[in-house]
Length: 67
Image (cartoon, rainbow, N blue to C red; front, side, top):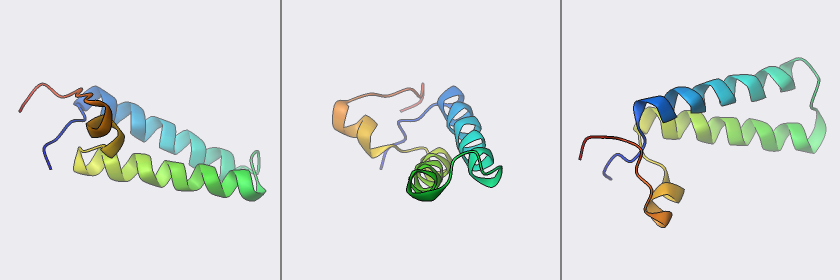
C-alpha cells in the first residue's frame, strides 16, 4: 500500500476523530448514531496512523507529497 494521506490530512482526521469521541463521551450524541460516529472516528484514526485511505485510492486522490 502506497501512502496517499498527507500530514495535514492526518492531523485533520485526528481532530475530527477526537471531536466525534468527545460528542459520544459527553452524551451529546448517543444510541445508534453515536456508535456509528465512534466507528467513523476509529476509521479516521486507523487511516491516519497507516497513512492510507482506501476511498482515496478508489477515487485516485493523493494528499501526500512523497511517492
